[in-house]
Length: 171
Image 1 (cartoon, rainbow, N blue to C red):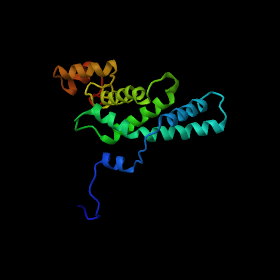
Image 2 (cartoon, rainbow, N blue to C red; image 1 turned 180 degrees about the vertical axis):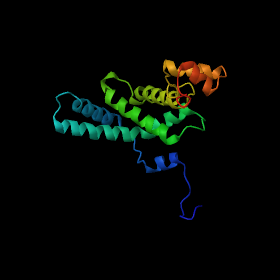
Image 3 (cartoon, rainbow, N blue to C red; image 1 turned 45 degrees about the horizontal axis):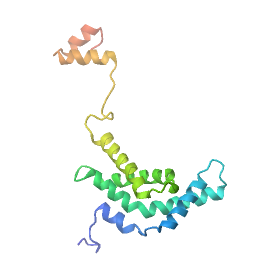
């Protein structure tokens, strides 16, 4: 044990420890979703909007561990992925799902939100951790491509400068 007397925990452990997980009763869940729908109407009264935000928060808190679990399932055993990032992405997807869910369609919320979470985490992995990601792609100007081609052909900076009528320092 460390000197502070606390066992060291990974971010997941801290996350789960800080949550006060209480599942929602089905009737309470439907009521909370109705409040969210009422508060998200374009001309909703400010009090309904406030109640909607509180209801969203209660629903999200009830499903946070579920969202984290789905996020971890998507990443599997990948060692290079930060759990905190995945949990954050999963929670953002969960909030989007809460705002789009309609309890009158007779679908369980867990079934509805799972594709949102999986899709967001998968997109995160593709965007951040794929070597062919657009994050690494750089658009070169025609002139830069020309210089790069001449470098690949084995020309020196002096040769390239003379061929393109540039100073050696520009190349």
